[in-house]
Image 1: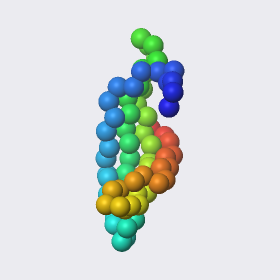
Image 2: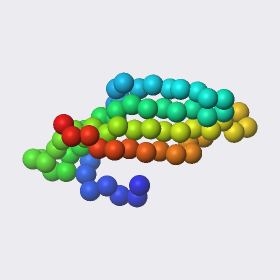
Image 3: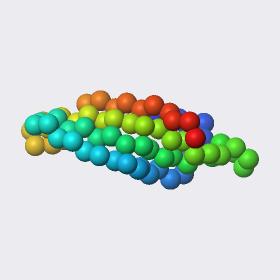
Image 4: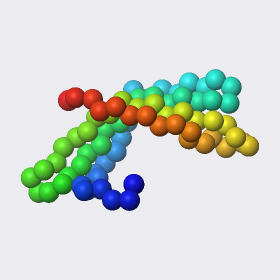
Length: 72
């Protein structure tokens, strides 16, 4: 990401789960991100996510990331 039209506050997660299948790991959960665009424009974004990692040469590398916004 080169630029964002808002200021990002805190980022946290809930209901996170990791499942490992050999050299593949799947991380799922809900990401919560606080943002502010101006003094009066701010909010909390909730997004379900799934990140896929592959074990390569002893290192876990992110090979796929997917997110979908959730309505509050």
